Length: 144
Image 1 (cartoon, rainbow, N blue to C red):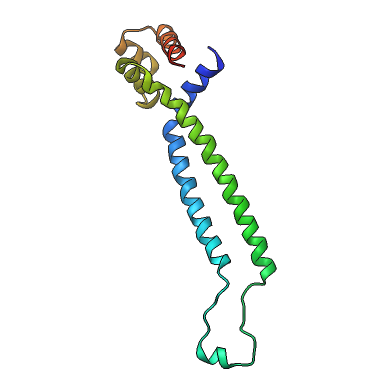
Image 2: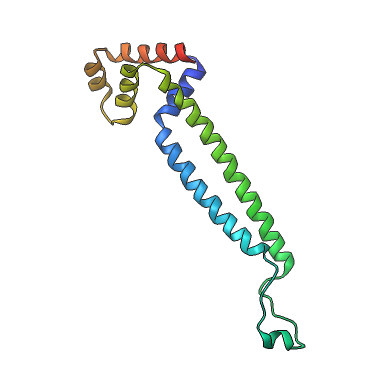
């Protein structure tokens, strides 16, 4: 089995996990962006009493700390975006299975996502176990 065929089968086997990870990472990026927005707001509204006061307006964080935290959040966001890119590539590789005929797609679905034993799937589709895996390899190599 060549490396690309193995990669396609592995991607197909884990495609639902990959999609859940992409969704989770997307939510984490949204949270990071929200946190970044809070750090980039420099205009703070003062009450009338604070505006008339000669004392400086109190701040909770120093600008240096805010900038360091912002840079850290940017790095975190970029790392999560790289993870999403890698998972998206794996999901695209799994889409190769959509090019197969319906019967072969059902075979792949039964084997990798329905939690059936390989022997049961092979019997259901009229193959021996070895013949089933050989068939899967052959049809995937045809479409890639």
